[in-house]
Image 1 (tube, rainbow, N blue to C red):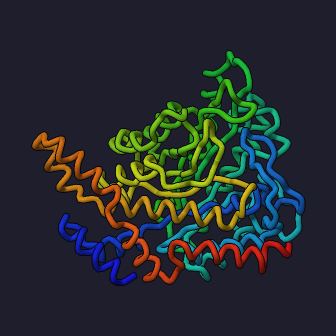
Image 2 (image 1 turned 180 degrees about the vertical axis):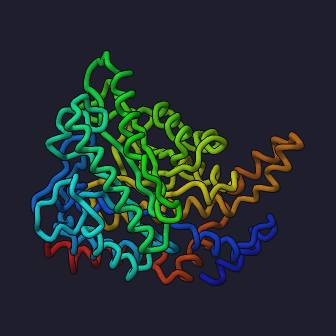
Image 3 (image 1 turned 30 degrees about the vertical axis):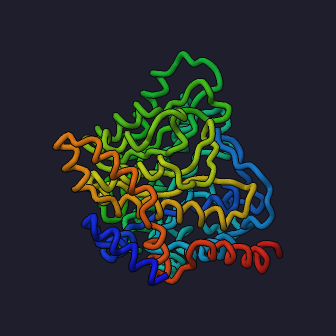
Length: 416
């Protein structure tokens, strides 16, 4: 490994890239890893909770999913041990430590997430948060914050307000900003004539939710759009245009989920378009296949392009990177680790790019040289740098880490 790294270091040095410095940079960039891959989005409000409704769906019944909070945390610790560099963990409101009691979503508070804070401190990770506006009787109509019925709308407003309080608590306790991301499933399966009405209701609800300010050091709010969901094919209240305008006007983060757009849209191109206007961006990365299918992230050209746009823009401090997929058809621990490792690799590709050289070619209109260098970089020895990063971080490298997952499946998951 060291010999391969020495050769890679020399090759990149000829392009003006210091690979030792790059490894240090990559180590310091946190990736927010979602917890809901590990239990198929069910949460632990009840002992038999399952995902239902909201236009989302986890498919598959592979054995070994987490059945309670302790198993989920154990699985997360295994995932963390397979990913180099800094990490955060992203949790939903339904993953509180309710200690076997029925706690309404408009009744949750910081006390239900004290165990998460304790766990995060032990594992030296930050936490992000999401209110859960799905899989609930008051979401069955298809509308939550945009509901025309005030009593239903007020219930969800209170839930999101409490989620913001919890996020502030988490960030203050950990000393790491907690991002509170708001996604709602509101919309309709068929043609809708009251679109403006619903969107005005949603705007007013969000305005009420955000009346109280919290320090950015503790928490920041993000709003997330979606093109459509199952059962909501014709109309989604929280469209990209709605939330982008709202985020810019109110100084919130805009969430870009790679599965929430038309398959031909490129999220990589949206990043430099949003940065001149938005406070910042939250990325939820998955692999959509024809729709928001939430497949595990793989090393595609688009994932690399997303990271390149962030690095080229010098926006690593304004773009918060996270995973978001749920595939119950394969080993869930392996799936979660694979996606996060993939994103780290894509970031590595971006950080190893000699951007200043490419810019010089572009400014001088030497487009052949620009294209040739971009092509040559595709098979440059980034893998050797990745292996060095894994070794320095004390995590297994490629062709080895999957054995750790299979051993964990044999020793832990298969016994559930």
